[in-house]
Length: 68
Image (tube, rainbow, N blue to C red; front, side, top):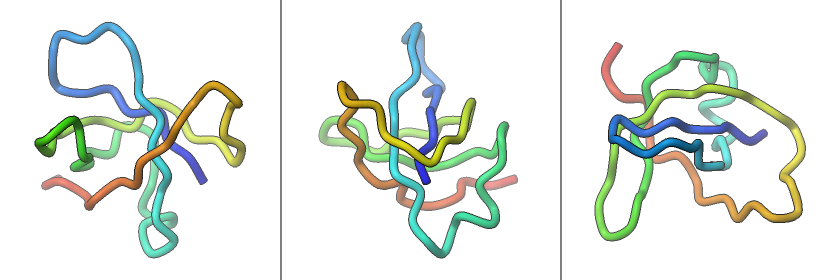
């Protein structure tokens, strides 16, 4: 499963991340997650879920849920 993540930053696009197997039941639109972004981790929100990765996307894995 893959998620389009909108970061809590002034970026005007979503980034695709793989949802780890143990998190798939909790992966819902609007959920807050912690993702790797460059050399740091950033908080983001799930905006869309899909079962397929588009050909132009490269997906890193979501690290964890973040808060409530």
